[in-house]
Length: 106
Image (cartoon, rainbow, N blue to C red; front, side, top):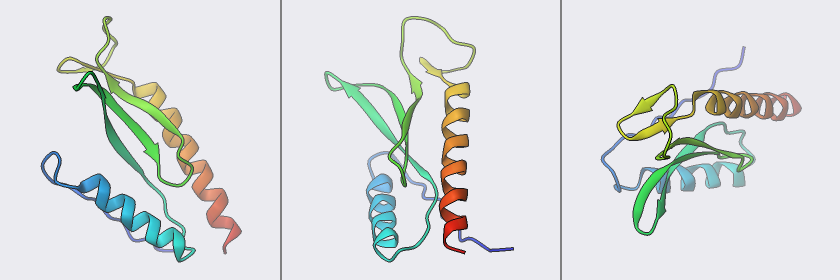
């Protein structure tokens, strides 16, 4: 069984977490390393945050993670609707793409 390194970046807002992981993933891709994961980005409209999107660092596929909308969904965090089913589908695609790419390099 292969072992994989895991990296979790944490920190306060706007400290550079997404920038750091984007640079790390670019460097690893340039060295032909298999990487897996996603980043979340803040989405703004008229300088106001309206939600967050998740982006697969391999394929650039993305989905809404949470968003302020005028209707309530089953899952809420503060004023944000959280899209659990969409995020589940997104993760399933991430895992599928990663396992296909990984098996090609074994």
